[in-house]
Length: 306
Length: 262
Image (cartoon, each protein chain N blue to C red):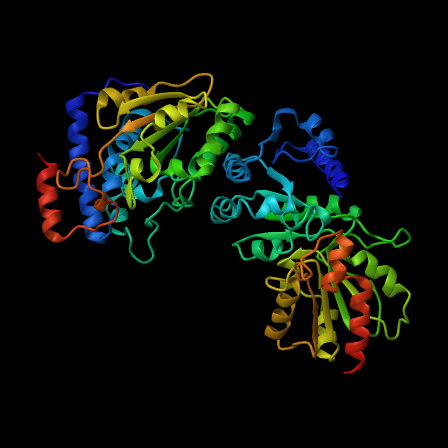
């Protein structure tokens, strides 16, 4: 998605100027942006706390400001700077974290971000965008930029099946019809689910949804999901994020507050490092039981017992 | 804007506003008076003799907001009614600066180690857009124990932010000790100079020293490490760490009011 993002920023800059700060990351990806922006592209160095506060200061002078790093360094190291200087000071700085979830795979746990959007959504006025496909990135960038509110853009690796025609980026998208449980995915992890669910019997397979914007998506649930909960259909949520602060818990809380708690909630979340060993993104998904095969196996077993 | 300021006139101003600061803190029954008194002269000098339209000040040592409020009051930017609301429910004058209601308070501050980065961002943002104005940041000396402050200094120096002037309130005392015994901060100016930044040491209570603040820098940011006295102007508070936190009793307040008039 980095290349798609770079293209989108270059197109955006051709329309209006902004400042882009990177924490010394973007090699082999952001060079076109660097070349186009000139003095508005700033390598702030390996100093993320300063980078975020500087971004808030720049934004205060009236120019749009983006901050870029790999996901854990973008949100965790400068957390207080995001809390105080961006959110409390109401500066619409846009923070981009590349490689959300287990995206950096075998690079190890310091490079993973499996609690990023839960942490950030606890902050006042913060908005989270999780594009699932490369084609989403340009629209996500446009939408969050237009919203003029503090935002976090979690980038990952596009895993969309080649033959699948994804609907346009919006907070909610229904990807596949199904007569089984409502299955909501967050981010690129939906890719392998599309392939797997598509092969199942439409009468019994999960109905696959994609959630990409929070809290807007939580605050404005699709009527179909509310109706499904009211009708007693189970709800499952798959995300490369820990349970605490997850989209799933927020979704269930929202449905409960509306008086339509799901008959059954099946959360599929990142579980950290249960074996204390490390590997690819796919390896960690399997360990957490959030890979497509594990999810669908668990759903068929659990939902059939209801 | 550079004025030759009459020392006697400035001393009269500081006496009057120091008394107002004591009133403010006593009425609210709050502490932090020591560090407010140590930077009050610098804030008064800035607001009366340096800051022009379009200039910006970030109070990185947000716990000295009382001094900022009375400086703004002395410059006609806050009223007595505004000051009366200090620390009360429903106030805009919170115990650390809160942004959003005054053009003179750009950022909510209070957690140390943020202000210099914010000020650097303002300076850079203005330069990128061709906007004029100088940018000032007032830090504490203990604040230089925060790593982010050094990140900010490196950034400001690298980008040659010559509209940025940093004032360090070097009163030598922090929350639970003196800066030398806590972190060997005695040679702060030398350390800052080691980053290639133009550093000057001045007396933060003397007009002759404060006048240097008005001089614009060139080729990068300028840092003034101000030698100051915690509790300045109230002899029984001067140089005493406990006045970082303690509120005044009525007896102490009355005595302090007498002493600051002398």
